[in-house]
Structures are given as C-alpha cells and as structure tokens.
Length: 116
Length: 109
Image (cartoon, rainbow over all chains, first blue to last red; front, side, top):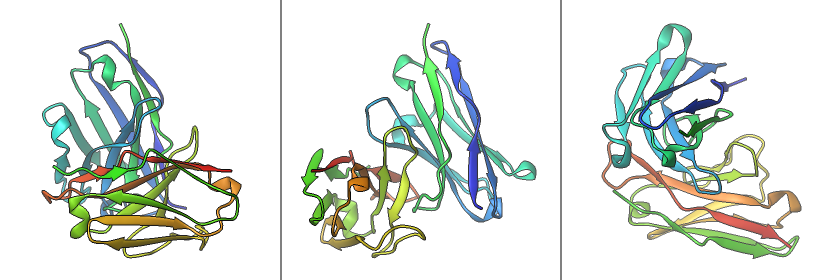
C-alpha cells in the first residue's frame, strides 16, 4: 500500500537546524509531488512547501522562504525537509504528504521541539 | 498570497446534515480539497476536485463550490465524524503554492 514513513522526534536548541525525512513506498516516488505541512500544538495546518521528486523543482510558502529547504534522494525514495534558524515558535508536528494538490496519503508526523 | 477562511466551530445533531464552508478569492479559480483530522492523528483526505471521494471515504461526505466559497457537506452525520476539518487550495499567486484554511471543529451532538 502507498505509505509515507517519517523519521523520529527531534529536540533542538534555538538557532539550530533540523532535517526530517519522509520515505515513500508502494508507488513510484518520482511520479508524485511531496508537500510539507506543519501543525503547532492546538493550532491549524500550515503548508510549508512542495517538491517534484522527478525534476527536483521546489516551491516554498513566503513565510518560510530562506529558512526551509526540501530535497530528495531518488535512489532510496526519500524526501527531506530542513528548517534552519530554529526558534521556539517552530515547535510543531511536521508532516509530509503526497501531492500534487490533493494530499494523500500523509506521513505519521514528526514532532520537532525547539527548547533551550 | 491567499487566505482561506473557515468558521472555527460548527455543531450538528446526530443524523442531521451539516455544511462546512471555506471562503477565499483563489476558490473562484481552483477547487478546494478537504481534510479530516481527529485528535492525535494525521489528516485524511475526504474530498478533492469537483466532488470526488478517495477510496474508503463514506458517501455521506460531498463537496461543492460556488463563487469564492467551497463547501463540505456531511449528510447524516455520525459520531465518528466529530473532528477538525480543513480546506486547502492553490494560492492565487500560482506556481504550485498552497494554503490551508484555519480549520473548523465539528461537534456531533
């Protein structure tokens, strides 16, 4: 079955970077976009950016421009989201989701905690 | 950029029909997709395109659109439909950028 499996929880200090992975299985990785979405505790969903795994083309929400980088390794069907210059407000669950547009399925989520 | 606006909370009596709406300028040009999220779980796609349901989504869920408003309708709401619902659409600036609505908490009474 189509599945996205994300890496485990992370704890980071303010100013550091975090890199979350998303491993795809059950379909051809390069045939569908990967999107990244985050959700702070008790808050709504926030779209961060997307990537076409075939071309490597990316697009980012204006809010995250300059701080987020989405990459991939097609040989292992894995996408990555790296967020830099972390601050406490970046504490959230980060999800990957297969696209384009209609996000299905989603990964299980990765909790990133930013704390000194 | 673009914004999508949802009512924060809606309630419905068990077995009745409820409509959850999403407003935004980009909806004049692009369809919304709808996601259901239960506590502690990842979101699940329930409606996409004009009015399409992924496999496994009950047919009591339907979608529609008019002008700048997209709607998710649950006909005969069940207790298990109590959840947060989010709309998503393309940002009006294009280039594959997307945006979510703020979410609607549905309570089934």
